[in-house]
Length: 180
Image (cartoon, rainbow, N blue to C red; front, side):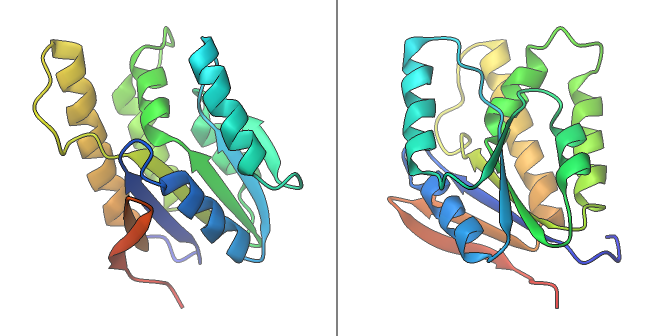
């Protein structure tokens, strides 16, 4: 890991587990200015309602960046020692990358992210869906998504100073190696 002082927290949980609310509380309690990077794309009415719900629960003073694909660029340009970046959510970003028409492969997107996380000077909270606890899905792309999500989570967890699993609104600490 880099010698820079940064704090990376991975927050995992299932759908409606409370993971986003937990991550937002962590960001609020950091005492730092918060930058919220939303990776979702509003492609239908249902997603528009989800986005509106998240917007309503976020503090108005937070800077919001909507970036479905170029997460690394936004992390690099916005991370400062005195701020906190909250990314919601990594599995949507994974989907965006897998289905992108970009010339960048998923392997390259992932590699760039992992390298960048170790170099960022500020606090970063990454929210993601735990999708590997159920049955093995049917269909090649669904299986690939679950596999890639699991591998991404493992790689981030290795680099993270803290990993939290949220179930039924209850945060459970899986790892806590806070840098001094």
